[in-house]
Image 1 (cartoon, rainbow over the protein chains, first blue to last red):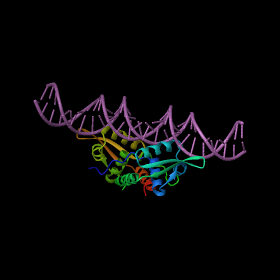
Image 2 (cartoon, rainbow over the protein chains, first blue to last red):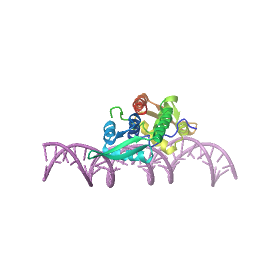
Image 3 (cartoon, chains in turn blue, yellow, cyan, purple):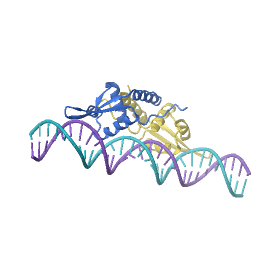
Image 4 (tube, helix red, strand yellow):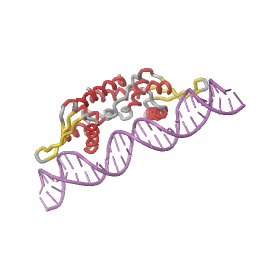
Length: 95
Length: 95
DNA sequence: ATAAATAGGTTTATTTTATAAACTATTTTA
DNA sequence: TAAAATAGTTTATAAAATAAACCTATTTAT
């Protein structure tokens, strides 16, 4: 086996990795907050959140805050595991 | 990105990162060796080495070993710095 | 000596990703 | 009431990764 194990392509992306990192620390965050923290464009963020959700790495809940829509994101247990495993693999590349 | 500083796109690629990681440890390696260690296809490796060379991250020297051509790669000081800086930025995502 | 296989790659084409631009719908402010 | 802001989504484009096809020369087998 190579020391360079494959890196989960879903996590090996700057924006998605930032999102996951953020969600790991706060455990819940809405679209706007993530957008500000990551400095991503809304369109890009929308697409990437969708991919993370489809992979089962995050859960997305849509609701209203007052009259305005809010999109709330939460990392899943599966997502945490994927993240941890990604980091373990990555370490072999950077140390 | 405040805590999420941009990750050098040239290094944030599985194969190129593996190549750089490898070259950091051995300081010189030929195409075939890198190909075996990274388990990359020749075509993909050829393209990615080219990009690293054009960025000034590695030096590529072509010569002959006996009658056969060999492509030897070596990381540059600039490449080492870029790698270290990439790793520093990456840490903010994964810890 | 000729054919087939191997070495050591490069070039081109295709697929996948990332990103930006444009758009929708509602709500608030001037 | 028109303009601007909020909160996103959808679609189009640019860039990247990867695979497939190709090339030249060298060995090895027949």
